[in-house]
Structure formats: C-alpha cells, structure tokens
Amino acid sequence: MAVYPIHRGRRIRSSKQVRSLVAETQLAPGDLIYPLFVTHEKHLQKEIPSMPGCYQESIDYIVADAEEAKSLGIPAVILFGIPKTKDATGSDAYGETGVVQEAIREIKKRVSDILVIADLCMCEYTSHGHCGIVEGGEVDNDKTLGYLGQIAVAQAKAGVDIVAPSGMMDGMVQAIRKALDRGDFADIPIMSYSSKYASSFYGPFRDAAESSPQFGDRRSYQMDYRNAREAVREAMTDAEEGADIVMVKPALSYLDVIYRVRQATGLPVAAYNVSGEYSMIKAASRLGWLDEKSAMMEVLYSIKRAGADMILTYFAKQAAKELGK
Image (cartoon, rainbow, N blue to C red; front, side, top):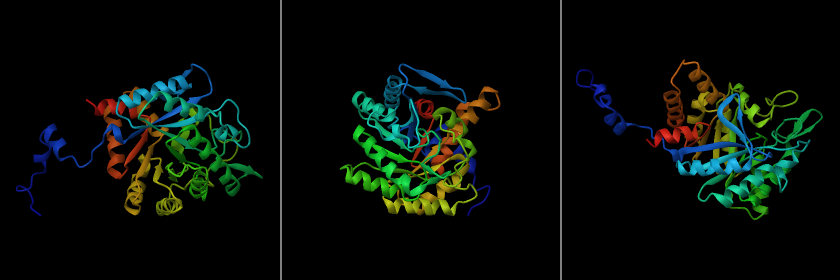
C-alpha cells in the first residue's frame, strides 16, 4: 500500500460534497421506525418526564403521529400499550378491544401506506410486570407461549402489519408462527427481539410504558450483557423457528452484537436505539454538554454502520427532518 506523500487520506475529506460522495454508510428516513405509547385515556397527550419529546397518547394523537411520520418518509410505527386495568394474564394484550388493537384499527383506517408494528409482550399488561405467566414466583415459559399466540392473533385480526415479540421466551417465535398460521394469518411477518439484553438503559421506557416488574427482575429471561456468541445463537434459533426479521436491543452498547448477528444470519436486522440512549443525549444537550443534533446523527449512523437494516428510535421524526434537509 502506498504511503505518504503518495497517499493523502485528507483528499477525500476536503469538502462536504466529497465526503458525501465517498460516504460508506447511508441513512435515510426509510430506515427508521417510530415507537409510540398508546393509552386508554381520551384526548390525552402527556409528556414522559424522563423522555423529553415523547408522550403517552390517546388514539387520536397516535393517529396524528402516524400521519406525520408518513409525511416525513418514515415507513413504520411500533405501538406499546398502556391499558386501563392490568391482571395476572395481561388480558388487555389479547382482548379484542385492547388498547393496541384499537389503535391498530384506527391507524389502518385513517393513515394509508404506513406499516403498523405491534410490540408483542405481556409486561405492560400484567399486574406483576413480568413478560409472561407467573407461577410460584417464576415466569413459566411454556405456559406463556399460548398467551403470546393469542396476542399475535388478536393483533393480526385488528390489521397489524408486523408482530414483534419481545419477551425473550424460549420457543416464542415458533408458537406465534403456528398461531398465526392456524388463524389464517400466514402472511404476517414476525420481527423478533431475538437478542434482547437485561439492560439499565430501559429505565425511561419503564416510566413510559408503566411496565416495571413488581418483584425481582428480568435477568432469568433477558440476556446477560457479558455474552455475544449467545446473541448469535438466539438469532439463529429464532430464524429457524420462523422469524422474518431479528432484532438486537439495546443498540448503542451492543454495536458488536449487531455486527455479529448481521454476519451470521441472512435475515434483515433491526436494532433498537432504546430510551436510555435517547434520554442521555437529551439530558446532556439540555445541560449544554453536547450538541443534540450532531450526537443524534452520529449515534444513528453508528448503528447503521454496525449492520442494522432498520433502527427503532425515539429520534425518528427529528432525524427524518434532519435527513430531509
């Protein structure tokens, strides 16, 4: 390889136009998915204190958000539900009139050409705050699978475009795929949270979704952040069970995992730029410690550079506006 002075790396960094021409990583609004928190309340938009710019919203506001996202070139929203009541089996998650099911129907009725993804989990709906059925103080993996299938079918009946199971139950993708196929919803894709880590970066989300566990934690089913090869095994297992898209969550502290999963599987890879990652930038920006816009873009490009095909991010609208300039 030629060395200085023949090789001058600065030649291709000399101007904005040249830098754009040779950029190895491309990011567009079409790569983004916008998470939304839908509540059973009427005509409500309540800002989440730990997530500035994000809200718990009634369905009318959710529909308006979906319309704005579409206008910005964002192809999809993902819905998280905040039910009126919670119980041991999270019945609002699979009820016909559950809050997410109602939101799906309204978005599909009022906003054309936007994909509606539904988070498929029980923690927001259960009185104990865990992602499955609790027996004897522990989450019963196999008993939970049947409920996950019911939730998937309820969301499909409401008109969802993609279901996204996030509970990290063993066999969840297979159970959901079978339930959808039996219900004549064989064409509904599954975006599986395949490599979901037990992370401190979920704190603000638990405020937003009101989903903190009432006892213990989720380390017995979410992954240990010390492990990366395990993430590849989880992704490959979900692929074998019928997942159409695999996800790594969180994103920013797990760029190496995104890369490994990307290299190991031929499936599209999603990455979730989670609430804590979002809130850190917002907080530091408010304190004047960094520039919010440039930090946001650097983070999103790093996730894309690591190998993500799509990014779930609370910055979606803000980033889309920036990318559209």
